[in-house]
Image (cartoon, rainbow, N blue to C red):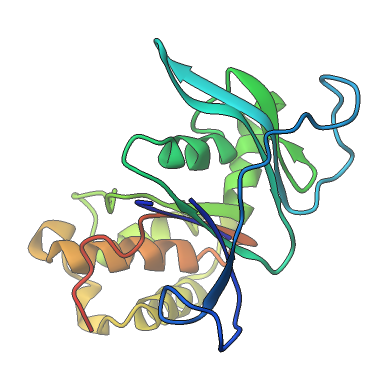
Length: 219
């Protein structure tokens, strides 16, 4: 999975002697700026999990991604650290097709993100789900309906959907009493937990978190 925070690249492990982020995480991963071998524009048959190759993204004169290349392999957790405006959120959005690179390519398993149509993008987002900086909940829907909204494509029966939703809510430390509530009646911290629960309910293959702990109440 990928997670963005405000500071460079950190690969996460379960080593007890590792430092930072609660003592669980280990080595720094520096962005690779060397050219990737192979013919330009060649579509890889399959990438390790998520592969970023020579990514370039520019807004006016400001270049936020400048030839960035790295891979996330199966089982790895990678944390993106950098100052505000460094391009962390931009990169995460480009991975799920909510933004387009100016140059370079992004590959998620068999998906070559830059060439996907709407149907394929939907499939990509089902298995590579993203939690945004803001909760991004639908104010007109209850918590139950917000979390269940993403499950509609699976055409689950009502009981199975309810079990998935309740399980996700418990996993983020909330009581089931929040299910009939509307987002505006809840604290920002509770809304953020619900946005995480909404992704958990999908059981995606990969998670992308954009500052997931921002606004959460301390334990």
